Image (cartoon, rainbow over all chains, first blue to last red):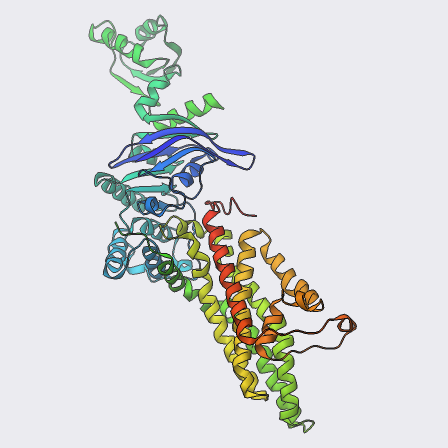
Length: 307
Length: 265
C-alpha cells in the first residue's frame, strides 16, 4: 500500500531524507514513525501524502505516485502538525469545502460531515470560528477533514499534541478502530510512550536516515550489542552476581536496594542460560525485571549509536 | 470512494468555502478604498455648490473625472489588487493553510481562481457602486457602462496579475507594486505601441475618457491611442484569464510542503 524505493528528498543543498526504502502492506494496521526533531519524519510524511515529490527514487501509495495525483490522493487523509486552519472561517463550512474538494456532493457530503463531526466529538462546536476553538478542538477538526472520505491511508503528524488525556485516549481508541477496519495508519510522534501504546511496528528515523524498521522486539534484537539492564531480586544475590561475572555477555553490574542490576549484552543468549541455572536450582531469583525494554530505550540506544 | 472533483467544481467549492473571508476587515478595507474617495468627492462638490462658488454640473463633472481616472483607476484598483491578492493563495502559502487543500484530490490548478473569485466579486460590487455614485456628480450617463466595465475589467486583470506574481516570486507583491505604480506610469508616456502594454490604456479606452495633468514629461508623450472598447474589455478579461491559468499551472507544478513553499521563487 505504501512503498518507498530509495526515495530521497533534498531542500536545495540540504538533504532532508537519505535514500529510503520500506514497504507497508495492504490492509489495516498502525505504524509508528519515530525520531527526534529534524530526523526527517515530516519530510517522509510530506512525500507520502503527496505534498512534495521525491528528489530521487520512487514513492508509491496505493499503487501510484501521490504528488498532485488525484487518483492516489483520494485514498489519503493527512492530519498535519500545527494549526493550518484558516482564521476567519467556521469549522463546519470549512469541513464542507474539504469534503467537496474530496469529491463529495449532495447528501453524501451532508452525511459525511455529520458522521465525521460525531466521530471526533465536534458536532456541537463545529459552527464556531476557528479562532474561537481551543487547541484540542482545532486538532479534532484537522482529524475530521482527513476522515471525511474514510481514507485507505491515514497519516498523522504528532497527533497527540494539544490533546488532553481524555482526548488522547479517545484518539487512540479511534485509531485502533480504524486500523481494525482496514485503514493503514502512519503516526509520527516524539512521545514514544504514546506510540508504544498504539503499535509495536515502528520506523525509526534519525538525521534523515531510516535507522530501523520492525516491531519493538525486532528492533531490540538488532541491539544485542547494546547492554540491556535487568533488575533481579532474590535471597542470594551474591551467588547470582558471582555466576554473572563469569558470563561473556555481562557488561556491568551494580547493587541497588535489595536488588542486583545486571547490564547484559545479547540478552537472547544470556537469558536462556540464566533461566536454565534458575530452573536447575543453582541460582535463586524471586523476580527479574527488564529496565529498559521500551521504545525510549530502543530510541536512545539507536540514536546514540548513530550520533 | 468518491471521484475527484473537476476544475469548475473545485473553483466553486473553494469560492464558496473561503467566500466568508471577504466579510472580514480586509474586505471592508476594499470597500473603503472605493467609497471613501467617491463619497469624499461628492461631499466636496456639494460644499462647493453650497458656498455658491460653482454649479454642480460644472464642478461635479470635473471632480468625477479626476476621481475616476486619477484616484480609482490609478491608485485604488491597484491597491485593492495588492490587498486582495495577498488574501488569496499567497497568504495560504505563508500561513501554511494551503497544504491541507493540496492533499485533497481536487485539481490544484483551480485553487488560485477559487480563492480569488470571491475577492473579485466583492471588489467588483464596490467598484460598480463607486462608478454609479460618481454619476451623482454629473457627466454623460452613457459613459457609465464604459466606466463600470473599465473598473471591473482592470480589477479582474490586475488581481490575476498580482496573484500570479505572488506565485512566481517570493517578493511578488513588491514586484507587482513596482509594475502598477511605477512601470505603468512610465510606459504611458512612451510611443503609442508601448502604451498598449499598460492596464491604464485599456481602462481609458473602455471608459472613453482620460485624465492627465500637464507636466513636463507630457511634452515628450506620443499621440495617445485608443483601442476599441469591446476589444479593450476582451484584452483585459483575456489577460486576467491567462494569469489565472498560469497561476494554476504554477501551483500544480510547485512543491508546497508543510513548512511553506519549498519550491517558490
